[in-house]
Amino acid sequence: MLYGVGVPKLWDETVASHREAVRDAVLEAAWQLVAERGLSGVSMSQVAERAGIARATLYKYFPDVGAIVLAWHEREVTSHLQQLAAIRARNADPAAALQAVLAGYAGFLRHRGRHGAGLVSFLHRDTHLEPAQQHLLALIEDVLAQAAAAGAVRTDTPPRELAAYCLHALAAAADAPGDASVHRLVDLVTAGLRPGA
Image (cartoon, rainbow, N blue to C red; front, side, top):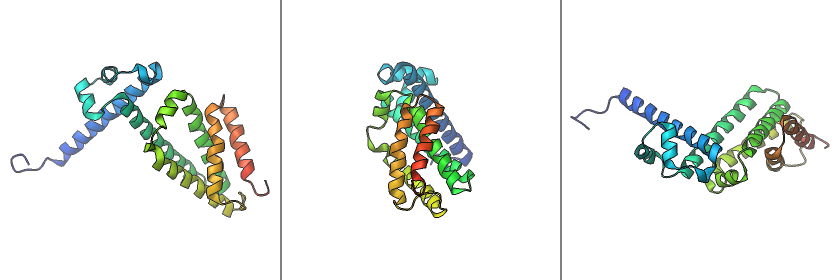
């Protein structure tokens, strides 16, 4: 401690807020550059310049452009999971909640498909998304279990298996040419979930 006193709380909060703002600026700058030039066409100097910070400062936050892009993606995935939970919470009817959550997830996948195969492959190459994928699977499984209890979803297959089916089938949304195609895909998936389907 400096002069026998701790750092004031307000100062700690200000420093933390500043660090978070710098980190957010870096993530956005890197993502914009990668979208414009591709992952291999972006340097740390370009990210620092776009973010409005010194290159030395940037290296205090991230070791390379790849690490920045992975951090950006992790933040996006967390945001998507929060949005899916909010979509579910807005729908009291289990069948409506299921339809809305699956449509929301398919929409995220369609957006992801625009990133290009190389970038998508890079973003999914390691295990940093494993906890998020397990969280997503559990969310879909729970929504399916509630819909099954309400009689809106078949009960001849466990909800865990149905959740895996939904996630794999909806992966096709990444290649969907438009919103109408995504809606048709979601309708097809939900039709296969109905009792007697």
